Image 1 (cartoon, rainbow, N blue to C red):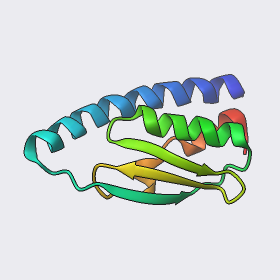
Image 2 (spheres, rainbow, N blue to C red):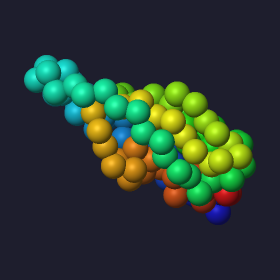
Image 3 (cartoon, rainbow, N blue to C red):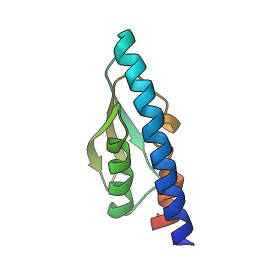
Image 4 (cartoon, one colour):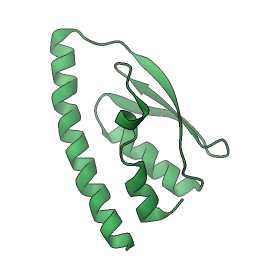
Length: 101
């Protein structure tokens, strides 16, 4: 079961990176940059899944994980424009399925 979730995670991450490269390129060329810091609650309880999710956010262009509150289950994420929670951490279910909560 973990292997399938791991495969799904990596395939989805590649898709998110490619989509973000295109989106960030368009926003930079059009001058549509409005930096914003989000506080994101996560269902992940253990440090390793939280760090994996934080790294996947940072790998995606236009977002960077600034800090992780492991006990409070919060991620502090900087983006180049305001976004919804689902747009920032679409990989959370894949990380949960792969590494557990």
